Image (tube, rainbow, N blue to C red; front, side, top):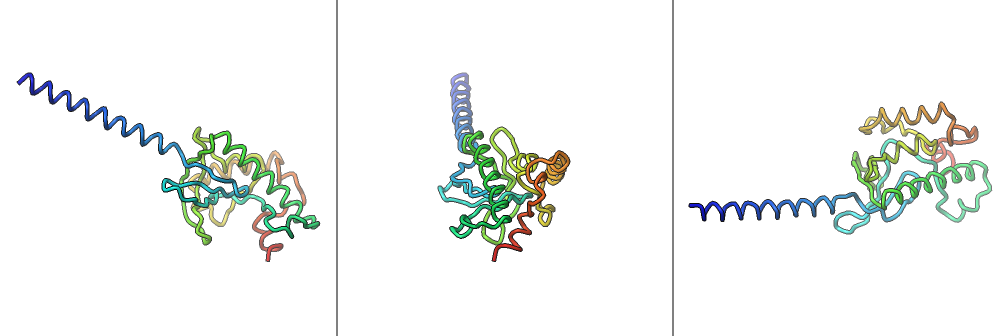
Amino acid sequence: MKKLIKVMVFWLCATILVLGLMGCDRLISNSGDAVERVSDGDTIVIKDANGKNVNVRFACVDAPEIAHTNKEKQSKSTSDRNQFSWGVKAQERVQQLVQQGGERVTLNITDSDRYGRKVAEVRLKNGIFIQQVLLQEGLAKVYRPYLNKCPSKDLIQQAEAQAKEQKRGIWNDTKFVNPWEYRALYKK
C-alpha cells in the first residue's frame, strides 16, 4: 500500500511539474505580439502566432496622416505639410513606445474595419496604453464616430481633455486640420 501511494505521489508530482512547465511555455509565447512595423501614428503591423503579418488600427483615436505617395511627399501645400509633419511626429512616438516595450504589444481587439485591419486597444507589456499616450501628448484625437466600441472610452476622453486644456501638440497648432477632415477635404 505504501509503495502504491509513493508511486501515485511521484506521478502526481511529475504531472504537476509537466503541466507547470507547459504553463510557463504558454506564458512566454503569449508575452505579447511582435511588432513588425509602425505604419503611421495609429496603425502597426504585428506578426501573429502563425507567422502571418496582421495590420492593426488603433481603436478610439485618429492620428494625423503621413505622406504615402511621392506627390504627397513633394507637396508644397501648407495643409499637407502641417498634416504630414504631425503625422511623422505621431509615427515616431509610436515607434519609440514600441521599442521601449521590447517590440511587443498586447492587443485588446474590439473590431475589424472595412480594410480588413484588426481594430484594437494597444498596450505595451508594462501596461502603458499607447492611445492614451498619443492623446496626452497631443499627437492624436479621439475618433468619436467609433467611441462606443472603445472599452477605455472614459480614459481616452480624459487624456484628450488634458492635452486640450494644456494646449499640447496639435492643440497648440491653430492651422491643424483634424485627420478625418483632412482625408475628406484633401484626399481624393
